[in-house]
Amino acid sequence: MDIDQVWQNVLVFQISPKWWVKLSDFGISKRLHEHTAFRTTVGTLAYMAPEIRGIYALSDNDPENDEEHTYTFAVDMWSLGQLTSQMITGRLLFQDARQINSYVVRGKPCPLNDLECHDASELCCDFLEKVMCRLPSRRMTAEQALKHSWILAKGNQLANQDPVR
Image (tube, rainbow, N blue to C red):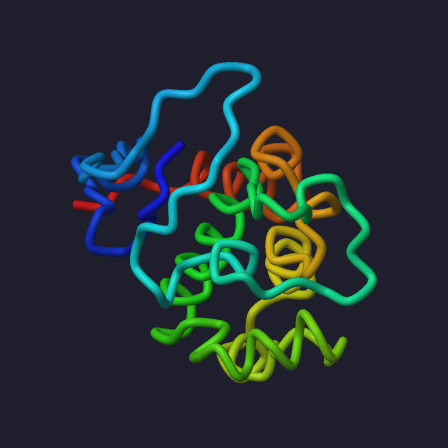
């Protein structure tokens, strides 16, 4: 688990057609075991999932939203969503705690305006909504993300591109 997924930690070693990308800066990563409980509040604030910040949906009766304030791998998926939004638009999907609170606690829609202004596809928006679901237990997992139609379509698109010279 890498609690600090930010764009500065993404290294591109090779570009199209055979992308080779690595995550770096595992200074605050954690080796996990099946029953590891996550409680540490570390990372880059702008990329932190709401549950790490102590922001929970009022309807969240999930076991992970208990008195101990533990969290799951779902926090990495939230960070991935922020990172993906930033790569597409140059901005984070959620700019501050007020926006996150409106989305998670008050049930406001996911703020997709920037994505739509950058001609992001419906599949892209769907991907981001699913990796940034307000309820951690309903957030898409890494395995599900790899099978999402937007990821598969992008992979096929890259595979069919001519090499960049």
